[in-house]
Every structure is written in structure tokens, then in C-alpha cells.
Image (cartoon, rainbow, N blue to C red; front, side, top):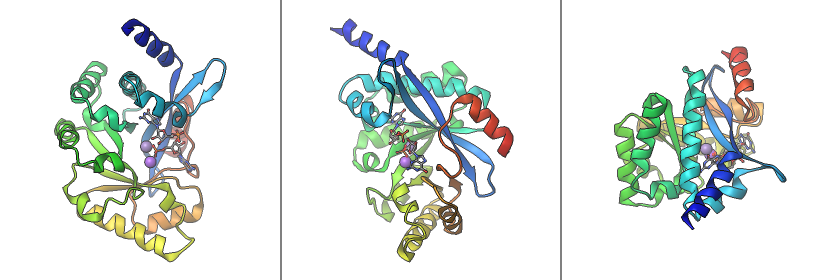
Length: 248
Ligand code: G
Ligand code: G
Ligand code: MN
Ligand code: NA
């Protein structure tokens, strides 16, 4: 059974690849990117993560997948030493005791500086008020790894919580960014989020920026970094290199 399971993982992992989406500062220079996994299926073509991550999450496969993605990203990022890079972690990965030593081992093995790595975890998972999860996040931060709350705002965490949570950055959910310019309440809300985060020493990324107006308003709201189809789509390593030469 175990062999069968590992084989399933091996087959799955052989077809996984990463694309990278750049993050820009307000003046347009690229300072980071987010790794996004794709499954290039031999028969079905490219399968998006929304279709297989939830399946993997129900089994041990998510641990293999998570470690594979982290290692691949660390290796790929050696060619881009000036960039920080974000890797998405599932809630279930943080429910395992081994997550801290796994991250440490992959960083050491690939010679990656911990401070270049940003682990992206969803706000809802961070919210889960699980003492073990919080302890593991704190341990990783203690070793220099950065933590970002992804899809922030969608789970309505509340402002007070931000101050007490071991986190370096929030990524404002694209549902908020997409409403910028459509009503003044959205501008007020995003500005408030930025101000509260900054008061707690937390960086703010506006994600899902698709239009010039959203970009302008997210800048006006004080966000530190910008990510979205307007700036760049997720891309392979070669394209990332070209993009950097063009923008930086
Ligand atoms: O790339 P795309 O927009 O299709 O991603 C859809 C979702 O899949 C996003 O919520 C993203 O965070 C998640 N995702 C992408 N890559 C990874 C990964 O390597 N690990 C995990 N756990 N989630 C990922
Ligand atoms: O949940 P997470 O933020 O990790 O999701 C990342 C996903 O969002 C990626 O799959 C990426 O393809 C997608 N994405 C990135 N920028 C944009 C954008 O501007 N608009 C939309 N609709 N999706 C985006
Ligand atoms: Mn993300
Ligand atoms: Na997100």
C-alpha cells in the first residue's frame, strides 16, 4: 500500500511544474515573485491547482507536493538572487509537526537564505486559532522565514488580530482590489487595511490588480507591492528573466 501510495506521488510529481508571477513596488521594479504550481497532465493538458490541491489535501500527497514545490522554487530562485519568493502552503501542511524541519532542511540543502522565502498561508487557516499552527509559524519566523497572509480580508479576521499574529505581510484579496474605483467604501476599506497593517509593521501587497485604475487606487491607498495580470501573468523561468531585464 505504502509503495503504491509513493508511486502515485512520484507519478504526480513528475508532471508538476512551477510558474512565477512577479510582484512590483510602486515605482515598478520587480522585487519578488510568487510560485504557482501547474500539473502538466500527459492526456488532459494543464490542470490548474484548484482542481488538484484540494484532492491532495485530503491525503499525504499534499506533504509530498508541498515539499516538491518548495524545493523546486528554492532551486529556481538561485538564478534570481535579488528576488524574494513566495510559496503557497496549505493549512494541512501546518498541521504536521514536521513542517518546520522540512522547511529548514530544504533551505539548507539548496543553500537558500531563509529571509528570501515568504510562506503564503490563507487568512482563514491562520485564523484557525490552533496553538500548534501558531507555534510552527513563530518557529519559522524565528529562523528568518517570512510569513504572508494570503487572500486577506476574505475571511474577515478583524483588525485587532493582525497585531498579535506572527506575520510579516498581508496580501489583500483580489475581491477588494477589483472593487477599487467602483465604490468609495472599497477605497476606504483598503486604505484602512493598509494603515492598520503598517501600524503593526506589516507590509501590504495588493493582489489581482487588473486595471490601471485599480493600480492607481491601490497605490493611493498606500500598498507596498502590487501583483496582478496588469503587471504580469504567471510565467516560466525564461520569461521571468526577460521580464526582469525589461523592468529592473
Ligand atoms: O495559479 P492559480 O490562480 O490557478 O492558483 C489557484 C489557487 O491554488 C490559489 O489559491 C493558490 O494559492 C493555490 N496554489 C497555487 N500553487 C500552489 C502550491 O504550490 N501549493 C498550494 N498549497 N497551493 C497553491
Ligand atoms: O490564492 P492566491 O493568491 O495564491 O492565488 C493566486 C492565483 O491568482 C494564481 O493562480 C494567479 O494565476 C491568480 N491571479 C494572479 N493575478 C491575477 C489577476 O490579476 N486576476 C485574476 N483574476 N487572477 C489572478
Ligand atoms: Mn498566494
Ligand atoms: Na491570494
